[in-house]
Image (tube, rainbow, N blue to C red):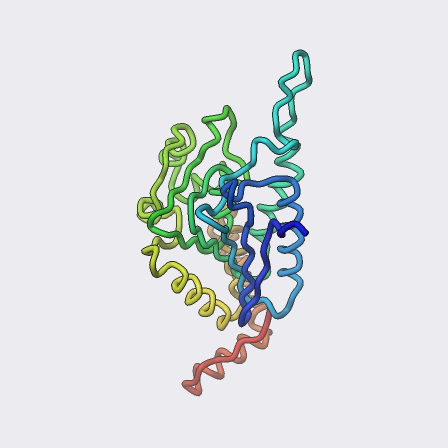
Length: 267
């Protein structure tokens, strides 16, 4: 049997999805998209999952789209109709980005190697990006005559500002993980030798936290980017009404008053 294109493991509330095309730096094919979409849906629907880690096998996180895959490979025959690359974005990358941004649990991108093109932007779709110091992020689209996709045009200016977003997207230079952290593109750059331990520690910390509130926090911050200040305040109030009636709020307050560790269970 062929090895899965997405490896799935589960440990103490943490579901880890590992992109598994190491010889191709885990670049995307239609088949890998299918396996990843199914794995994300399974994690979203499993009450035992309280944190998701997305990473890659081998020496890369994800090199973006495999340009040899039939879904995007140009038809070079004379007079042939051009390949509709946009259809691939609509079919695969748009649902992928939307699914990751709407997971009911916190999502960590554990960037173990180079993240390029759609692979870089997939990482940026996650809630927390933890990267090895030896890694880099590359907006490689301009090098093949395309624009950033998988949410890149939306994410980049919001994370680093328009000037830096334009520079990263137009020039397509490698951005070392240390610089990505300094610019605010990612959450944390860590030394390679402690990378695995750091990812595990952050994941377990998130597992112990109020999962529903964490997902609502992401949603509120994203929604506020399109709201004026007063509307954002009203949106916060609506969320607090819902969360304030939850078990985790009552548990959190009781634990605080009793000076004990809380036991959060909502999801």
